[in-house]
Image 1 (tube, helix red, strand yellow):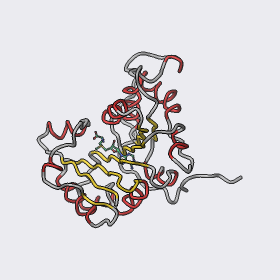
Image 2 (spheres, protein in one colour):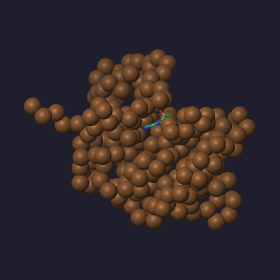
Image 3 (cartoon, rainbow, N blue to C red):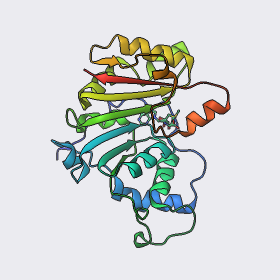
Length: 248
Ligand SMILES: C[S@@+](CC[C@H](N)C(=O)[O-])C[C@H]1O[C@@H](n2cnc3c(N)ncnc32)[C@H](O)[C@@H]1O
C-alpha cells in the first residue's frame, strides 16, 4: 500500500513554538473536537483555491499565525466575499477563533446541531491547524491576493535567527502563493525583527516595499484590526510597524 503524504518525516520542518497551552475549557474543547473538522481547509493538493475552499470566492487571503484569531474573525465578517485561510499551530488559538466565529464561549454543548457560525456570518473561513510550511505544497500557484504575517515570533537571539519566519525559503513559497500585485502585510514590534524584515525583503527580487513616506509604515493601514500581540506591545511601550510588500 502506498501512503500518500505531502511531506515525509525526514523533510518535516522543526517547529519551535508552543502547540498547546493552558487547559482548554469544555466549550472550546467541543469546538476543537467537533466543529473544527467542518472548518478545515482541504489540504490535499488542488488545482485552484475554489477546490481547496469548497466554494468559489472573489478573492482569497491567508493569515499565517493568527494567534487568537481576532484579526481574522473581524476581517472575515467585514468581507464576506473574500475567502480567508487561517493557519495556526497553537490549538488554544484555534479554539479561540472557533469561539469568535460561532459566538460560543461557555456551556457544555452535546452535539454539533447546537453549534453553527454566528448569525450573519458568511461561510468564508477555512482553517489549517498545523505548521503552515506543511501546507505550502498543497496550495496552487498565485492562490492569494493578500498574505498577513502579523507579529511573527521575533526569535531575537542571533543563534535562533534561522527560526525566523521571514527567511529566503519561506519567501520563495510566499512569492509563489501570491498573485502578481498581491500584498504581503507584515507587522512587528521588535527592533531586531524590523531590521531583519527590511533587510531580508530588500534582498528578495520578488517583492517591493510599497512605503513612500515614514507614515506609511509607522501607522497601521486604514481599517486596521488590532491583534492581541499588538495590544500587548503597545501596553509594554513598544511601537509596532506595518510593512507592506508588493509581489512583483
Ligand atoms: C507572536 S504570535 C502572534 C499571534 C497573532 N498574529 C497576533 O498578532 O496576536 C505568533 C504566532 O504564530 C504562530 N506560528 C509561528 N510559526 C508558525 C508556523 N510555521 N505555522 C503556523 N503558525 C505559526 C505561533 O503559534 C503564534 O501563535
